Each structure stands twice: as structure tokens, then as C-alpha cells.
Amino acid sequence: MTKVLIDGDIVAYRAAFHAQDSDLEVATKKADELLEMILQRTLFVAAPHEYQVYLTGRGNFRFDIAKSYEYKGNRKDGVKPIWLHAVREHMVEKWNAIVSDGEEADDLIAIEATRYGPDTIVASIDKDMMQIPCRHYNFGRDEWYTVDDWDGLQFFYKQILTGDSADNIIGLYRVGPAKASKMLEGCETEDDLWDAVLKAYDGDIERVVENARLLWLRRREEELWQPPDHRKPKDD
View (cartoon, rainbow, N blue to C red):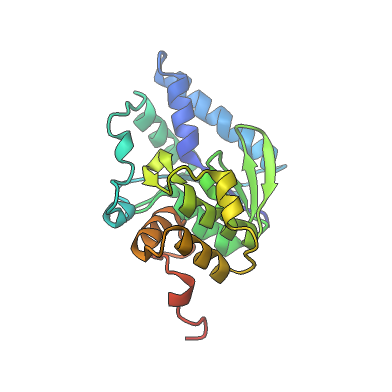
């Protein structure tokens, strides 16, 4: 069975912004249209058990982890669209959206994608999802991607190098995706990736681990990312 996991945060924001100068009916109609379009593109016949919509709720463990820079501190002055809350409520009531608690919708999606396996489809426009080994549908560009385990790991370690300006996670100075890829050339294992990133940060393990824990999408409940040499053997 193919399971489609939908990033409802993007849908809610797009629908609410679309109706910023209009009324709630326009906003909820836009949300319905976006979700219906996603399902049409990802499933021939969408039964309720074949898809799930996720929304980010209250709290986020990352706020406690961020010490170097405030997590999402650059968003304080951002103005949310007036219909956002109402659209989210509509998505919960009509589409049975699941709202996260203490973590992001992205984490719930990554956990479920791990549980269902590589045939899972993640529908989002968020580049962070490219950590997750499965099939991806970018509904903004109408594009498909497939990410395997190694692709996802490489993307994650590149993120540690570049940071994520959208969430105020600061990476290395003047290191973008292309330079990060160059810095990881020749790596063949996760240990290689870890060593390369740690070297790039001049051995500042605390900073590397902080960024990694902020960027990592959980693959199991309550997970806190650990460097490869700190993880317990799987048979323990």
C-alpha cells in the first residue's frame, strides 16, 4: 500500500495568503483545492486510509536545543495571514489533519515515512524533507523525486554545513549547497560524512551537534540525534 503524507502547513499558509484580501470561504476552498490536487497527482483513488495530512502545533523541542542562535528567531516580526487559524481548523475537521505536539509536522511525517518505508510519498515543497528516504512530490513545481538512504544522509550533512536561513540555523560562513557538496566529495560512509563536517567546523563538536539536532527530522518518537560514534549498537 502507498501512503501519502501531506505537509499541511504549506497548504494552510498558501490558502490563507490566497484569501488575505477576501473571506474565509475563499480560503477554505483554496485549501480543499490544493489537497484534492495533491491526491489526484499521487493517488488514482484516494481512500481515507491512504493519505494523512499533518499540521505543526504548539511547542518544539528545538527551541530548547538552540543555544548559538535562537531557533526561528528571524520570524518574530512576521505577520501571519488572517485566515490561517481558521483554515487549519477546517483542515482538522474536514481532512482529519493530525496536529503535532512538541515537535513539527515535518517530524511526524518523517516518523511515518520511516514506518511505511521507501514507497511512501511525501507531498511538500519543503527542501528539508529531502532527508527522508522515500518518494517525494513537490506540489509547487509538480515534480517527483526519489531519495534513498545515502541521498538523505548526504543532504542532511550538507545542511549542517550550510545551515538553514529560514529557521535561523547558521552554518559555515559563505558555504552554500555547491561548496558543501564539494566538501563532502569522496565520503562513502556516514562516519566519513561526520568526520568531514567536524573538520570543516574546526572540531567544534558542540556546534556541529547543535546544528544537526536542529536540522534532523525525527525517525522515531522522542528521538534526539546522536553522532554516528555515539549511537548504541542496534542489538543492545
